[in-house]
Amino acid sequence: QILGLDGSLSEDLGTTFKNIMEALTDPAKRGNLSSDDPAYSFIDKINAARDNISRLRAQVGARQNRMKAASSRNEVEIQNMTKILAKTADVDIAEISIQVNVALAAYNSSLMVGAQILQPSLISFLD
Image 1 (cartoon, one colour):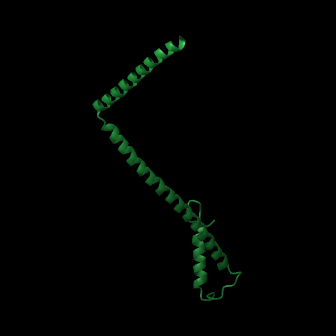
Image 2: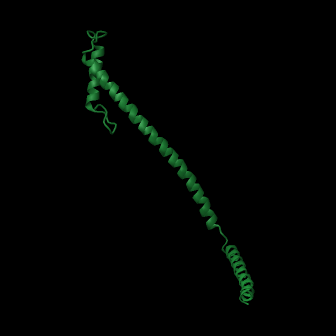
């Protein structure tokens, strides 16, 4: 394998480039490469390395896009939570206490009215 899974280059790639450069710069071989020449196998190795690099770059790009999307969602959530925390911290305890007592009084009075309505109707129903 020319390019390792961790993205590091192996010695084979350096040797491959060296051999290709020698094959390309050798005046005796220039323009006279045959299909059985070792340079052709080096070119195949370079193509394999290029394909592997392209695949890894695509994977990194996809992960980077997911991270950017997650980061932006987190920023929105942080802003929302900060607003909720600010509203909770800024609550006037006295005002909320009054509102709760008013709601409790309304609830108790509605229970009393319901009880008063049910008493006569049960008695008249039993008669």
